[in-house]
Length: 486
Ligand code: BG6
Image (cartoon, rainbow, N blue to C red; front, side):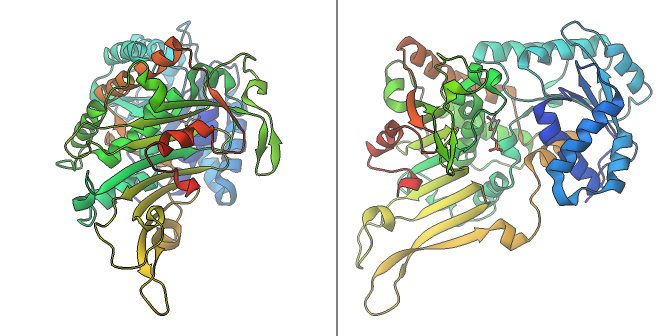
């Protein structure tokens, strides 16, 4: 693997959950892979008044626990030499000078500022960096979601950040785009002829996208309660997956060619307005139950959740895309916390054959389905009908399966490993452009507004199930069922 250019990565929110759990272990893994030059630096920044030693102790504990058996003391001591810490209070605008002193003379290095903070700090941080003359031509800014809480607030952030960094320097992260299987979905679509003639109305009956988690809100209730499943998952991850399934083949693999096509999908999503939102969406909130046999509390009993909260921890929605390729093909999306298991998949069900001359299973099981699985394992499965052994022509469904771990026998890169290296390389393909983000919010906002206007409180579901019964009814009304119900 090629070494990356020397960089000075400044990590705002450096003591936060994402930094410790994902970003620093991802960088450490790149160090293990030999991709970091010895001269590169990772500079954690946060408001805590801690020493560099204290910070290193936190980073080490977290890398040890997240990297597991591959953790190696020799590489760690090299990595530790490259990690620094500064205290900055972005709201008060203090601490930037020390960072300036640390970066002085290193202007030629790639300089990514990763903002893993509350979105309200994005603009103050960028403005602080500009004031202190820390923004060089080789600078990039990486924005973690959520980018605002609605279209207006997101536009405002983009405006203020855009006054300091050019669009080519802004990397808006959606970590789902960094997942290996998502890239494989693109390879499947744009590297093979096989599916393209079938990838359209008349051939595809319907599409399901499920991102189910068995975890609850963990320690993030303060954030989550202000956000909910619509904004935490659907506005970004699920819509991005939908775009990759539905987009036209781009002209090239370049960032803008990809992003132009995704944008067209977002713009072709049929808007949901007013009371229609109530029939096409389902909101849910978990109550107590058991996940894998372990009793768990309900959402309202979680730490830091207000007892009267009406935040949704589950959501399902039926979307339609008004394009020549997809008109009339429903896309059902669902996501939730404290569901039965962690399972993320895209299921594409094809239309039936016009006439059958053989004995076949019931209609639902007879259909060809392509399942692209993101979690827990990463695989692509195509179900086809084959002849049952023995006399007569009786057909039954069987799977043609590609299991990535089995086939490639190598560890898949974590999404953040890929995305961080892309930031350093300056590759924007897997990052969201400003107009994409705006189009996503434009589709999302009326849903939330209708929920509020019509007082649509979430339906409760027991933890450890697949969500409220209304979600099965939503897809059931069209004569289909979620893949776990087949
Ligand atoms: C994050 C959400 O973006 O994605 C979390 O904020 C969610 O609430 C997480 O748990 C899921 O990511 P993954 O990669 O574990 O599916």
